Image 1 (tube, rainbow, N blue to C red):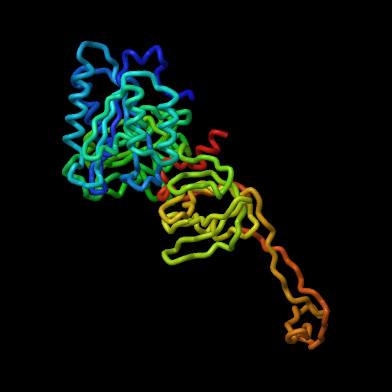
Image 2: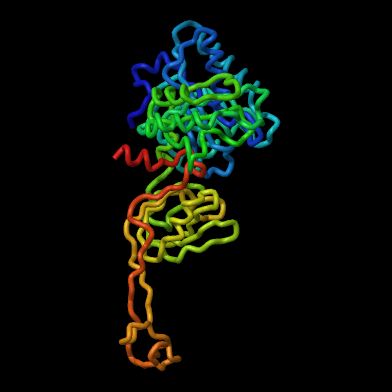
Length: 431
């Protein structure tokens, strides 16, 4: 599995550091804690190898906090006592900034001085695609002789270890700008016209900056993030950042290497019957019901294959994507991308239409005068409303209905896109 990790020959002078679960729904951000840690390490003269990594884990894990992102970075061991100084700074910063009062915040920190093994990479992929227990993480850490620090129940160790080992065959970058602390919780002040200009100048090297002319780079949570710009390279996100005009002070900014928008969370499946809750899939099947709308504006349809059937949902936040789903019909062949949540429903992130089943409507026959006839009553044939002629034993006229869909990909808007979901612009670009 090729990625950005150093080869085995280089690991002797590298200390890998990972941590996770320092934030909560009410504040903080693990990437911000990472930015502070790296500033303090560099101030002490330490050398960081490459970019810090922001690794998004399984978006359907029930214990996740917001984006379910863990971070890691690598420190060059170029002097005596570096390992102990790194540990001291990292642990002190995690303790200082973590939202320990929140019952759902359970930080974990991992220090690892060794090669990125196949076991570690496979473990990391499982944390992105399925469910992994803390016991599994601790067992692997013990096997590879990684040092683990747990706060409260220490669930963050799962992500911390994954962030160190995650292979990045496909990768993106995100530049995150952070606010000054007195602005936390206030409306973010970013010049919208500058974001539109930035998007015109850098798209598709950067992406998901806008949706229907509204900016999407600013979050809506009380965290330290002012905005995040995602792109294909460091150069692209730096250029975009320089074009954005903030109307409030930026405390700091930092670029992360990431698995965001790579579809890494999706696994192929042999059949619907084998799909499991809290896991993410790329599944082929046939539409088996006419889509319908339920309370809240969510659109539901059933997908089937030879092994079974599953309910699929395009939820209200997916906005116009629901119109695409409403246009599906029984017999259409699809590949559906998404994950299975609490209720066992497949949450749709995007679809690929492989085949559109022809749809027909049936009309009464026309009279010889050209007027379309009306029913004369059950089993009585048809009667012309213009000239009163009657006919019997004539079938209805079969007419194919024009579909508003075409074969190809359809995706949810950026405002509803999960961090790991690969946007169509990246799929097209890579083709």
